[in-house]
Length: 122
Image 1 (cartoon, rainbow, N blue to C red):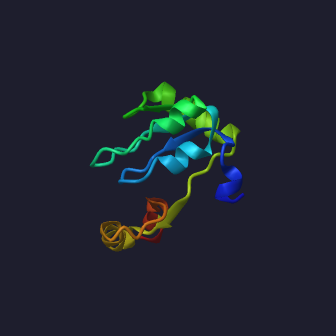
Image 2: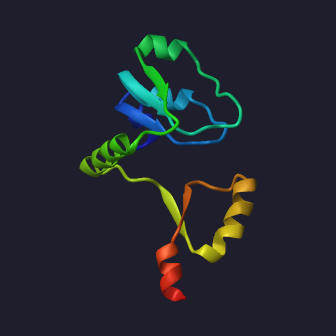
C-alpha cells in the first residue's frame, strides 16, 4: 500500500521515533477519531498542527512507559493483529558502526542486537 492509499485508513499509530520528525503525515494517516500515541522522546518539542486534529476529531496522547500489564496487552494486541516492527538485526561486533550511523542519521529502522547468535558463535 502506498502512503497516499493509506491516508485516512488507520485507527491508531504508535509513534516510537525519538528524533525530531513531522507529525502531520502521521495525523493524515488516521481515520476520523483516530489516535496517535507518542512513546518516543525527542530532544526538542515536536510541532503539533491543531487544524488536522480538530477537523478529524483526532487524538494525540503519550506515555513514557507502561507497567507489566500494559506491556503484555500491547504484545498480545500486536500478535493478534500481526503488527511487526521494522528492524535491522545486527551482530554485537557491529555496535560501534551502528552508533556511527545513528550520529549520521543513517538509520531507517531500529537496531536489534542479535545477542543469541553472538553467544552461540563464542
